[in-house]
Length: 489
Ligand code: ADP
Image (cartoon, rainbow, N blue to C red):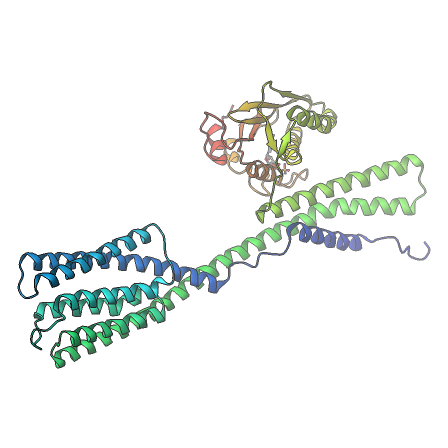
């Protein structure tokens, strides 16, 4: 042998080149990786949701308090003791307005409406209502002397206490501080307006300050718990996603090392032979045919891997256009009949009359039919028969591929649409991706796929396109359908 040929690639070189080309291809088809959910965004989102729930809880309490206030005002209208009739009427109207506003807010929150500015506006409105209601009824001392009964002092003290701690439910420091300050301020203003005795009022104000501080630290505590909890959930989700990605990579590596290395070695060996041996034209053609077949097999495997990668990234897209169904089946027959004929299997296609118009991705539909017929050819013995049929089903079309092959045992039917699943792991004619891809194609069209099979008699795969639901038969989800329809000979 002379000096090394610069154009000759060793299997290792070509393997690296192939790996690089697969990577390029995957990257161009799949685009940049999804950066995943941002942790701070998740935490804020969770806090927002919790604050909405808290605001709803407060709305219920407020509505209850406003209803009690209205009730008490009505009581004072019917059993007047101190206030004159104008003051009683004003007090009642004011509290009734508070009740109406409370009910409106409650209904809006129950329907899912929520805005961040509610954290400021609602406590301010609450404070104004508590103060207004109190001052209207009791705020004008007679002859400089307080006319407020102890029960009313107790009542406004409780309301201000509610106001001081309510901010804790809004899960924001500023909202908690605002509510705490408002609780104290409202009571101080009410006490000043009604000339309440100083010392007991200071005692209540001090208690309200403590309640406000408690509310603020409760907010801090809840925020810390939510942050930890969201972080924990997010991390375990990321771990699960990473685990899945590692498993999928392992699977792909296995396939690349097994299934792509073999045809690649075949190509390298045939090329070596052609370079090193004198060959007749016929021998060269034979070697080139071997190389071509190995190349085609590699191409098919890479295409399947790309499809599965797209499927997992949720990017299996279909472009719907009107499809000529008889032409679709005729093309499938032209493509697949030679393969079937190689095994003395007859391949028939039939398109029923009066089919509805089909809007689908013709290339993907052809791929689905091709996968099913390819399997039928693989698993049907010599002399068998395969029938492909398109018939109307509801507003769509039902395709079926029926073979007279080995059949699938019922206990395997639930698995066959899974990725990398094969009844016989050693079957190197495929890698267990065909049905997963076919299912993804059908589902991307809004259709469904299912199977009926009898061991040693044959298998029929059905899928619908054009309409999501085959009419009338009320089929459940795919795997369950497969299980339910399974019958053993
Ligand atoms: P593969 O490309 O390896 O065949 P598929 O996802 O297309 O992968 O099929 C998965 C498995 O389902 C096959 O390995 C085979 O065990 C079973 N299977 C699929 N189609 C048929 C069929 N028509 N008859 C019998 N078994 C089938």
